[in-house]
Structure formats: structure tokens, C-alpha cells
Image (cartoon, one colour):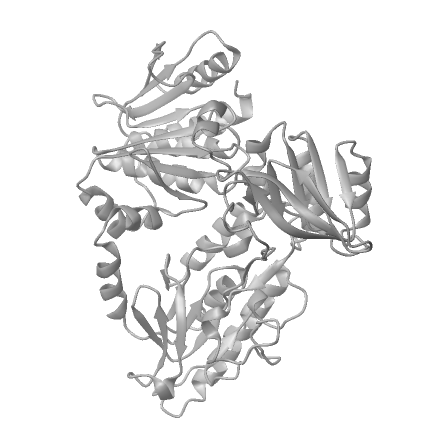
Length: 531
């Protein structure tokens, strides 16, 4: 199952096992079961601390693999073959079950251990989903730490009957004790806070007690990461507050235009960004959404304050807004009703759930045509709808899409409604913009790829925004409010690209530092260091 190179790499990881572990595979004679058994045998052959047993219990999911410390009933299960993006989840489950420490803050680990309720989690995933591993790994870790928690990862492609019965059309989909807990990317902190009823109040109180920062970055994408690094290198107190580290880059699959790196993937780049920030003395506050900026002359503290949705307030002498952007929605009837039930925004994540079905892609730019090409290998047919009379994608992508027999491109098409049966999408309507004729098409899924909207709603009325909702900035990243700077896709800077956002983050950070050393009440002097 595993080639020699992967075995060598895996062997190096398994040497970190502190205690023996049990791996139990529940299989039959079918091909997928034998594939999972082969994987388990390969893994067990690499370490004397792994005990492998085989069962054929039809009361449990087949094929499946359970992992746990020897002497206790395994609480982590992989229903399916954990390869692709989930191979890392398997490795971490093996190591953590064997006593290797998790790289998480002690406070959140203690919070998991203190949870006092029986929790049985199930997570439906697709192996091509780059968002699923974070959820799977978080729930696996919770199960390893707390004997009252169990978790099963379920590959939706192998257990399609369950997917259909539960009407799952977006992954990851997390169930707690049989009830849907949430869909989409969630961090360990997100999940724990959903389960721990007292978490929000305790966290808000703790955050409000934090000392004031010199620079507080709002947002954890490429612009925010660059800003935090440049600020921290000045030796000043630096913080980052974000709903999730990485932003939209976390949902990006192939990145081939990041100079000096020939090719990478969004989640990998995000992990590298976060590690680079953590190499410095930066206070990172995750899973918190900013809802208001309070200028220094209006705040109780005399400093700029960021009010969070949790009710907490963070104080700083300067602020850098780097909140990025989100997927633009169609804003047609039925879109919100069927979001996650056929209306999707990530073809890499949710595409496998529509295998053999007919879908549409809304948008003829690079993202839309790339989505159509990717989906064409999975689904029965893809119809691309472009609002204008010209596709905006690169020629190489257009030629590829036109060469595929199961891809149809319709131009001058305005989506007018998403149609469903109350449970899931069954079709959509569109209008021919040239003739005015209305048409209806039967579909199982609609993938929306029509660009981005800046995450700046919380700034309205406090900071000057363009007519597109972007933060208006000057060449130094300064906004209309003294001491508040901005960078990246949330701003008026042209060309929304990762590398441009990083440069803008650095610019805003240097400008914020320059602002600080000119404050009459700074109380100290700082010497400029080479960038």
C-alpha cells in the first residue's frame, strides 16, 4: 500500500511513540477493505509498539480502522481509507495515542480534559477536502484526551447511503450525538467552545484583561501575517486577532504564482505563515470576530479599541486592519435556503459529494473555469454560467474546458433562482440576457465562483470605505482614522493576490511603527532596523 519513500518517512515519525498502541481494522473481503488492511499492516510493520488486530463486525462500519492506547478501548475511528489529505490525520492519531504531545496551547488542552459530558462525534469528509483535516484532527485529539469523547471520521464517498440519508451536501459535516453540530472549517477552539457552554463568557473576560498592544493586527491572512512579523521584529508588543488563521488562502488548493515557490497548496502555506508568526513574540487570539473599531478619542482607555463579537475589548496604540475578503454570493431566491444543501462555494471540498450527478458553476473567471475542469472528472456534467458575453479566465483554462465533452458553457446568463425540494437543490433558473427568455435546468449542485467581497461591514460609519466597501488607504496603508492602518484584500489596493497582500501588510506595519515613534506620549524611543 505504502511505497518505500513514505514508509521511510513514516518510520521516522513512529519512532516518537512513547507508549504502545492498538490498531483495530474492521474489514470484509471487498477491495476497499483489503486496501485498508494493507495500509494497517504496512503501518504495524514499522513499529514494535503497534499491535494490529483484525475483526469482521458487521454491526460496525466496514471498512474502518480504530486507534487507541493499549489497554483502553479505542476512541478514534477512521471509517474509510485515511489517505489523501487525511493521511496526516492518521499519523497524528497514532502519535498522540502513543503519548506524543499535541502542539496546542495548554489552556485549550485543559479545557478539553475538563469537559464533563458524553460526546460521540461523527465527521463526514471527502479525501480531496483541504478543510476537513483540521476538523478531523481536532476531534481526534479531543477523543484521545478525554475518555468521555469518541470520534469517527467517515469518508462520504464510501458511505454514500449515509450521506444521502442525512442529506449531506457539504463537508466537513460534524454530528454530535446524532445531531448536526456544524459544517465547514472549524478549529479545535471552535469545536470546544460549541460544546463548552461557559467558554464564551470565560474567554471574553480573559481577553478584556489583556495588556494594551503597540500594534494589533485584525485578520490572520497573508497581509495580517506579514504585518505581525514586521511589527514583532521591531521589538514592540504585537497581537493578532482573527476568526481563523489563513483566511481565504486556507480554501485555496493550487498556488503556482507565489514567487520563489514553484507550487504549493493553501493549507500548507497557511501552516508556514502561522509558524513564522509564532517564531516571534506575537500574541495570537483566534476564533474571535471583530465587530467595531473605537478610535482613541472615543474610547474609555484613551487607546484604539477593537470590540469583539464575544463582548471583549482589546486595546492598542495602533491597529492594522487585514480582514481580507469572502466569497461573493449570488443574492437570488433559494441561495441561502439551500446553502450547504446543494449550493456550495468550494469545489475541492464538496465536489466528491456530487459524483455522477449534474452540477453548475456560476462564474467564468479563472476560479469558475478551474472549478468546472476539476468537477468534470467527478460529475456527470458541468454547466458553466457566465453573466457577460466573454469568459474572463486565462486562455489555457478556456481551451481545456472547451475540450471536455461533459462541460457546457453558457454566456450572457443571469442566474435568477435556486430551486429545491425543501431538502436539497434540484435545479436553477436563469435568464438569457440577450433575448430575455427564461430557462430552467435540473441540477444536483450549484458551485458559486463569482469573486470576493471585502470583510469590512464592521467598519461602516467609523472608517472611510469605497463604494465597493473596501477600506480607503494611502500609499502607506493609512486609513481615515489616526493610528489605524489597513492592508490586503479588504482595501482599495488593486489586484487581489497573495504576494501583493503580503507586501501591503509589511508596508502597513512599517507605517504603524513610524506612527508610534512620532506619538508625543510614546514614553520611549525606538531605533529603525533594517527590514
